[in-house]
Each structure stands twice: as structure tokens, then as C-alpha cells.
Length: 388
Image (cartoon, rainbow, N blue to C red; front, side, top):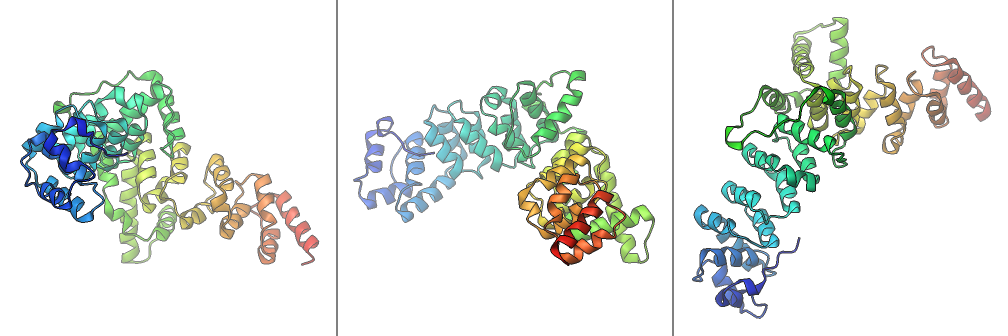
């Protein structure tokens, strides 16, 4: 967004400072807060100079603006201001909670500015202010997307705003797992009544919020090498553990698995979307395919995870098809190899990837008892055709 200040809205003295022909010395004096302006004009001038082409002027103006007392800023932000002014101040004062609260509450603040703020602020109270304005949410769904993707947003609030979107037929394309979120909501929506937004002053985190924040905020779940999680989970299923170190790893993963299993579907989907590789390694084994699909659509998914996941024969058919049609992943040789050897892979996809396998892997496939016989036959025919 551009950040002009219409000179006609300023006093003659303030307009003189912001005139393109104004001397650099005059601008620097104003940027230092040494010009005798009323609070509203002072905030506007400092804001405008904060975007001045002269780096020394803009830097000084931003510094001065950041040090202004709260009462000066708040009294100005309660006034009707231009959208550009409000947007610029939001960017310049992102760390000043009282200022940002007034920007969020100002009716003149643009939807784009609120969406940007929603993606950057970490205050639950500020985010609840955003949640409470359903009219704005429906008018500009990108704000709902920003709420969902901000880990600081309460889970109960996320449930409320995503249900609001679904009930009003709004597609949230900015959320990778929205199809899964929508399916989960539609699966229960007939038995539920619309959730009223509680007054901000009386709002308190509920158990759902505390469980989600505890899980998402557990940085310890990133401590275990992600490649080990699958091995540990498999060993737990077999009952294998041979050393104290392994027992410690098993206990750690068991606790993480228990914590995740205690979450609801919508919570799991959000952890799958925003969480770390270890949490995804557990959630990809979930019995609910919506959760598994959310794992695969997570922005944090890495190539090493996809390679491991394609070995799993517990993946739902939809998940295997999704991977098989994801070109960025099927460019990886190991992904193609794993999919060919995974009996859950649709035959047409397995045959498509078969043609890309190396001679050694084709020969190994000929002797496999884990894939359909038709694929074994195709492997033999391919080897004969290649003359290998």
C-alpha cells in the first residue's frame, strides 16, 4: 500500500515540512520531533517522514515515532485517519501493543492492513479483537486465513472463524488443508449451533486452546532427529528396546503420540499444518485420513519426509494418489521407487513410475511378493525390452 499524507489534511506548518521542495534540514528537524506540532500532526508528519527517500531522515523519523508516549499515539489513532496513514503506522509501530490495538479498532483501517497485522502480531488479546469483527472477516477472508496460520491464535477462535467461513460458503484457499478442515466441519455441523463470539473482556482460553498451545509450543518435539521417529514408532509397536538411550527415545515419542492422540480432528489438522517434522511423523499414521492429508499439505513438508512416508503401507489411498500426482515430489527418484514398491499405489501410477526405475531396481521388483503380479509381469517385460 502507498503511504501518502494528503497535504490538504494538515496544518500549513506540517504541510510545509512534507512538501517535496522542503529543505533537508527542515525535514530532519521535524524527524527529530523538534517542530511544534499538535499530536495528530506530529504523528502524521513522523509517519510520512518514516517513508522518506533520505535514509537518514526516515530512520530518525521512525526512531522518534517509536519513542512517542502512548497517550500521544493513541489519541491520534482514535481519530478518523486515511487508510494509508493507518497502514503505515501499523508497520512502523508493530511492537507497540497499545498503538496496534487502536489501529485494529479504528473503523478506517483497511482490511488489507488488518490481514497483515493478523499474520504478525502475537498477542492473544489483539487476535481476539480481530476474531470479534465477523463483518470484516466475511468481507475479507484473507484475515481468517491469517488467523489460522498464526500459531498464537486460540484454537477455539480458529474453530469459530473457519466454521463461519464454511457456513457462508467461503473458500479459504490460503490455508493448505482447507479441504480437510471443511470436511471435518461439515461432518459435525448438523449437530452444532453457531458459536457466539464471547465478549473480549470476559474471554478466557478453554481446554481446547490450552491443549493445542501445549502441543504446538512444545519445542522439545523437534529435538529428536526426524528420521528416527519412524524407527522408534515401529519399535514401540514391536515392543523392541535394547538400550537406556532407546528407552528414553521410546518414552519421549510415546508421550508425544499420547498428547497428539488426545487432540480433536480440527486440532490435529492444525498441528499437522503448523507443527514440526516429528509431529507430522506421528500424525501421518493417524486413523483419520483428513489428518493424514493435512500432513501431506503442510507448508513445512520436506523431501526427506515424503520419501519416508511413501514407504508406509498404512497410508490411505487418497494420500498415496496425492503424492503420486505431486510433480515436485515425484521428480525424486526415491519417491518413484517407493511408490512402485508400495502396494497401495494405483496400478496406473506404479506402471508410470516403473519406466523410470534403474535396471537393478527393476530386477528387484521382479522378485517382490509385496506388489501385484501384474506389476511384476510389467517389470519383467520392461527388462526384456531394455535388453538387460
